[in-house]
Image (tube, rainbow, N blue to C red):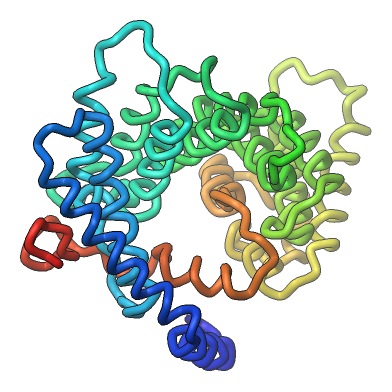
Length: 360
């Protein structure tokens, strides 16, 4: 959206996709499936869990159809799309002590939570509703020990992201750490660089700067597509700078640690210099309130309030999930998911996407 040339290329590709015979066939199939699901929803004899699944797929497929083939510019909030599915799941599972959740139901619950995080964005401007808290409430329904590994991994990562956005950094750290411990199966596709970056950033947020540095180094040595080395170099620089500040201001600091202070500060400058892209270097300037030349002065972090400025701006690049290296999926993803600037529709039925029985 910010690059006119890329937007022109993207709009052209979207038009080609929408005019493609396979896409037109898919649109027709979606219409048929949605109608069948709505008819099934009319059956009063279906049990609570099946009704929850039906409600989810109606909202999911209707929204997909509208976002992808309609190029909708606003986003329907997940709390509206999946309200009935959520109430059925919560009504069925909440309060039970021992139960098993099928893979399909676990996937749906995790997916709804993911949509709540993306679409409702924790904003209190919509009737005081907080999507992050609602996602975490849903995740509490899932018995972690009984989930297969890829579901368990996705659950922990999504929990971490929700906790991060609620600024509960210790809980986010624990969730990302738990995700990293989940065994990897041959069919799993995980971006460990993103996950290790997230974990390191949470350590930095709670002032465990040495642990953050170790984590960023692990991230640098991991495969990944979305978290660039530039970003990691930038945050390594800030972690070293804050470790230098922490060591400098600690009480009872032995004089022999003078070499450590020099090492921390020099490493901060080293990693700032390695962050070569213009946008990353601009974020260094914004977070530090100085340019690199001024940062090289030992008085650069005299004020404690600057630490919060750095932490708020530097350690906030949590990446929610990875994309396949496939242009078509990337286009569909950008249409289906909502960016932070997209308008979320409020909770008024007349302005929402129609998933009612009569909306055929």
